[in-house]
Image (tube, rainbow over all chains, first blue to last red; front, side, top):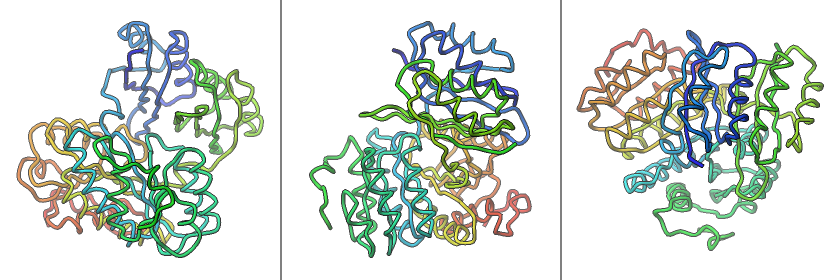
Length: 217
Length: 217
């Protein structure tokens, strides 16, 4: 089915998303992405990506007739603009170095047509990190997580095991604690860890993370 | 109204989001965030954040009764876990240096209770960058954009003017082209640009971007 993306400007009242999704459900559209964008000083916007067999212009017109919807416009999809995401989390010193490697390598692949974003969050504490690891699988377009620190274990290691079972690839820096034992791949040099993370998700690279399982560099 | 976050496991068929939003509309809930998470090898998940006056347990039970919904669980919200976002885009060399400054500074604020994420996309080309700039205002939780490169102008400058009118703060590196003329603030050193970006959005910092309007460092 053809894929579409639309941005709607809506009044900030309950029931609007219900109205929009009703139109799409009636047209047997498959909604693949939704974002609600709040603005402090003006009307909220709802961004939708969906695939549908019905005529897109017709669906857009129907969305525009939903009560509370002021405007609907077709727009390019996020997948095309921001592409795959790699998340790096942990201590600021190491996250920065992993990001440096990953950003430089992503630049090389994005020039050849890839779209890879490198997202980071510097964060300390077992509980905060474990929650952030578990939440990664709920973020859109994330393919790989790098844990960058000097000591991570306990509940963070449990969280790593959980997200790996859900299909996420996890690279860990070589560090103290039990997190490296749970990762797909362990790397000592943070810059190289960032480069390998990008190579693992880039279609323009030849690097098979499955062949690297449990290896340490 | 109390704020809640739930993660639902759903079958991959049209109409599920319609069913979930119907429950929330009937309960006069205000939906603040939605994510649809697709998995290659198992059922999709829909993550919802909403505020509602009605009893949350009752609403969760009703969400679980929607046809196609296998499971509903309460979960911590993204806002609490990943917080505010700063986006850095442009050439890999500069994006890496800005990220280094921003990540190190975010680390210092996150230790004091802030939650600031630093997201980057290395990207070249006027058209690709202009599209990415325009799309930033559609991403959730983004407060500030840093443009990091050596030459940016034309449609990118137009896109910067557009997103600033929509309330986004934009910092530009000092560079060739017309983008610096459109930014809130121009900084020559990329590491300092990253640090200032974090200071501008951190509640734990005293840095007023309004007082820095059109300044150049």
